[in-house]
Length: 155
Image 1 (cartoon, rainbow, N blue to C red):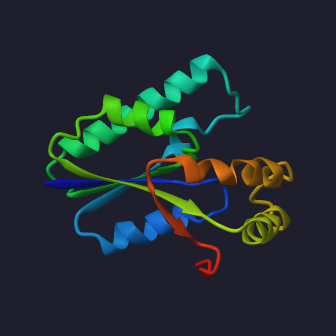
Image 2 (image 1 turned 30 degrees about the vertical axis):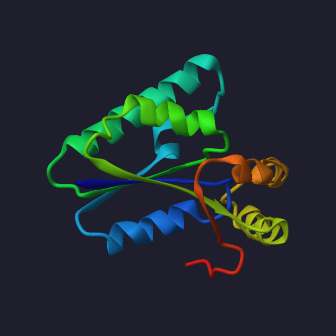
């Protein structure tokens, strides 16, 4: 039996950090960051590009699930709507998988501090703070396990 971890959260809550650590901690694991499937310049959000990124994500997740080398498949992305999670789960073969859906959250202050630090370091642009904070309440409505990362140290 394989285990699939779908880890969502708004920008700055620590998704990538958590997933990188899980990849090291879990036996025979592979990590996919959904952002890698949509790394374009300019970044364009259209119906066509949204469909493309879901296609890319599902193709890769199915490939990892089918590959005998992996027992643990770790995926993270900004999944702020249940429909995003559902559309991925509907298109991948999870018959022989245990699925863990997790939403990482943080307090507004913690999120604002982390994102401000990233902006100062040139990792993110200034518009990310308002967009990220606006999405925070949406994660409480999802059918996921919630983990607050507010007091966690960044690696």
